[in-house]
Image (cartoon, rainbow, N blue to C red; front, side, top):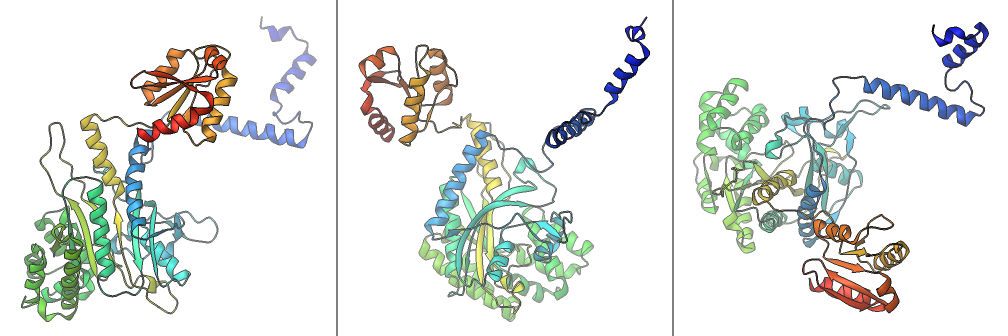
Amino acid sequence: MHLLGLLPRRAWASLLSQLLRPPWASCTGAVRCQSQVAEAVLTSQLKAHQEKPNFIIKTPKGTRDLSPQHMVVREKILDLVISCFKRHGAKGMDTPAFELKETLTEKYGEDSGLMYDLKDQGGELLSLRYDLTVPFARYLAMNKVKKMKRYHVGKVWRRESPTIVQGRYREFCQCDFDIAGQFDPMIPDAECLKIMCEILSGLQLGDFLIKVNDRRIVDGMFAVCGVPESKFRAICSSIDKLDKMAWKDVRHEMVVKKGLAPEVADRIGDYVQCHGGVSLVEQMFQDPRLSQNKQALEGLGDLKLLFEYLTLFGIADKISFDLSLARGLDYYTGVIYEAVLLQTPTQAGEEPLNVGSVAAGGRYDGLVGMFDPKGHKVPCVGLSIGVERIFYIVEQRMKTKGEKVRTTETQVFVATPQKNFLQERLKLIAELWNSGIKAEMLYKNNPKLLTQLHYCESTGIPLVVIIGEQELKEGVIKIRSVASREEVAIKRENLVAEIQKRLSES
């Protein structure tokens, strides 16, 4: 017989009512009641979650976690980039991660469909920022700023098909530098190209080339080739794919998908195969068709002046005038540029890296005016460093070479060989922290000395300070070099000075 069957009917009814009572029924106070209700709801949610058989723990498509090892490499890259921006006089700033959808629409051409729209949470239609340029232009117009040199490092989001193996993501970091204001032609533009050269040279990624063109030359080329003006932006977007697609595929897209006449596409093909230095600029001045277009002549004139400044900066050999460069974003109005790494023979064990452009930018003189109620323009020129692609290259090279990354900056480890020395270790490590020294200790009352020393070796901590009964009695502290394993006793009052001296010499 079941044990419950032995209970009297009244006792069984009482027990059943207790089992069926909700957890908040016995609450004696409002706070306690609310707490129990919340606990019950959370428990039911967790139970429902655990019952999902197909749930897979993963990051969303096109995103990634960054481990401590990744963060060390990324911070080094960002430090180099930001220090260059500051060297050129830029001020830092930030903008919200999302903007009014109206702020971002009609600024990116065909790419506008790649924006992440947010669900309406209170009467405003919002989108995650697609780049850092449009929010900067909105900031200038909103605050009536007429002149500014700024840098901005932040995340942006694009709903495109990610190619993780080539450093392309849906969520990624951009590093932008921009000069806003009315200045003499091509001086700010030349500085932007100089900054790109400094950063790419400093990162030691290998040989690189910066392609330059001018949006006015692109539009002039379209006009003299017979492209209807209504198709300029659409055809520009196709030309922008020449770094990823062969000419025949781009031609097919323009003719079949965008309705361009085949003979017009062929005329464009004659131009986009041209690339060279300042001599090509001179050659285009003499081109029978291009020389008849006023817009193109203005662009060629500015490029000629730009090459003069680039020569003075000593970087003209890194720059190529390339008529295939179009930059698909709608807001560009003048000089445009894009940096690519030149393919070098791969070393043993290395895979060829094809990551596309690693930096790009250009002039956008009309974007701020699009936000100003009176249409007042603020001329701007800027650049963006492709941190994710650069990070991917550095990461792959480190893997190939088997390089290890130290994930902490700890300089000193506080250790003891004996028991019951926690208090002395705490006093000692506090003294080091208060002196600005990066220090660690194990979170144990009585750790073994061998365990402590092994921790230092595995994490790359260069120095160990050791305190025990003998050291305490003599008023000294032992300093141990982890690399050489040499130990020396130092007077307690001289410890900080001795550590600082050793760290400055290393």
